[in-house]
Image (cartoon, rainbow, N blue to C red):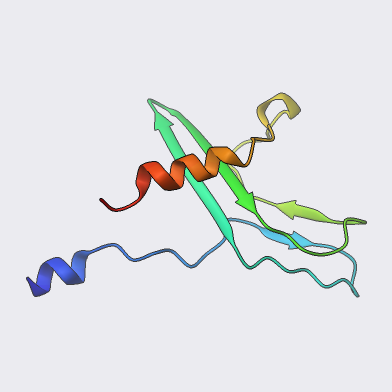
Length: 91
């Protein structure tokens, strides 16, 4: 039993990227959701962040293994993440 509890996964307290802006800008993000999906050699990563701060001179940097083309980056409806929460909730 102790081994099972020790091996149980814990929530990840990390963010797969970082925000950048001007030197005097306050950047705030107190929640992020990341969904990874894999089929064969294709991996899709979907991210939802509640960034709060100035939008001028703002960027979110996410390291990826290849240079992405604009058509590979999409904005998803917020309800996608709500649905993932429902499907992955403990039962």
